[in-house]
Each structure stands twice: as C-alpha cells, then as structure tokens.
Length: 242
Image (cartoon, rainbow, N blue to C red; front, side, top):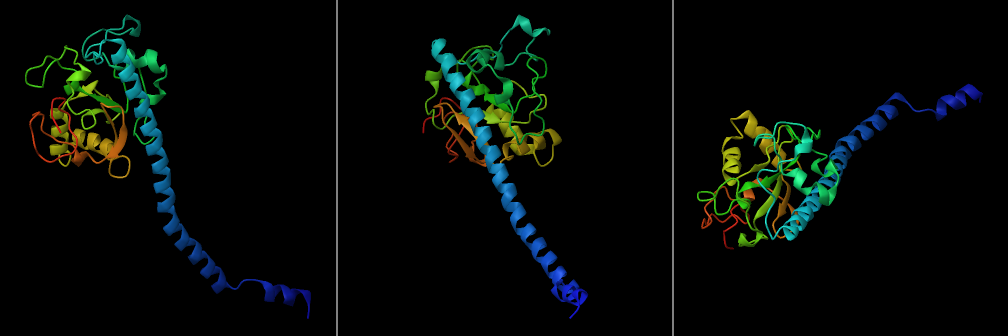
C-alpha cells in the first residue's frame, strides 16, 4: 500500500467534518448563554461591592455628623463650576471616606464615565426621601434627615442603580413610581428601568441597615405613604413600619 493511500484512509471525510462542525455549533449555542450568565454574575458581584463601599461611607459620614444624612446640597468651591442645585452632587461629601470615584461605576452600566461636578455621570442614586426632615409631603428639600428616623432600616432602600448619563443626585419614591409607570411608553423612563434590571432582570440595592442585595424593581413599593400596606417587602418611605 502506498504512502498516499494510507494518508487518504487516515483523513476525515466531508461528512465527518460536517458532523464535527455541527457538534461544535451545538455546544456553542448551549454554552455561550452559560458563559454570559456567569460573566453577568461576576459583574453583579462587583457592582454589589461598590454599593457596599458607598453604604459604609454613608454610615461613617452619619456617625461623624450626629446621625445626619448627607446633605441635599453640597457646595464645594474646588469644583470650578457654578454652584447651583442642578450641579451639586452628594458624592463629594463621601469622597474623604472612599477617595476613589471608581466605586461610582457599574460594569454593566451603559455609560461609566464619571465627572465629579457638573453632570455627574454615576451608576447609583440616593433615596431622596431619607434626607428630608419629615416625610415627602411635609419635609423640605434642603433639610438633612436623621438616620434614627428610619423605622425599618432593613427594608428601606438607601442606594439604588440608575442610568448613569446625567444622573440626578437623588430620586424619591415619586420618581421611582413615575419610572415604573411609564417605562413602556417613555424613552427616559425606559433607560432608568433598564438600569434597574441590568443584572439578570434585577439590580443591586443598598439598604439603610448597611446590607446590599439583589432584587427586582417590582419588589419595591411605589407609594410614598409611610402607612401604605401594598404588600411590597421594600420601600423608600423612612417612616414605614414593618
């Protein structure tokens, strides 16, 4: 038997090659979603670590300031921008406790550019209902809330994920309610809703007691009434009892 004949007998036929390619394609279809889910899980964990660091900084700030939450308006003359309410962010108050703006970035956010000062592009926002002296209808925007006012700290959200482009300083339960009610019809609400489901149909939430957990946005009450009993396990209202 010649050498060329032996080589011909040891090679793959066209049908065998097609079978191998088909098997590889099937494995790719099966495994790629698994890999994508594992990657997103890693991103979710990284994001949760960011929120945990911010929550700890918030709690440290309050311990150093007679249990007072971060201010609604934080004036810092070093920013080099006009100081008005639309340009002032809560982040500078926490910077001495973390000293890195990297924690403002979520790896799954659509825009992770961070500019401290004008149009601060961050992936997380603060619960505005906590910073007022009383509940939404009686409080003032410039008043600093007391952490001791929160009746159920394990159920009251402190920080949540949000669209990073032109992120506001804080959002209230009213902002959350509007987003949940209009995300199917309004482009802006759709962007914010996407931020709240960026980690496999949910996102990370930081709570007043300091813990961080993944949850779906529909698990949070859209009612800012502290006496509301809509059956939701989490809420924005600091005065709501369990």
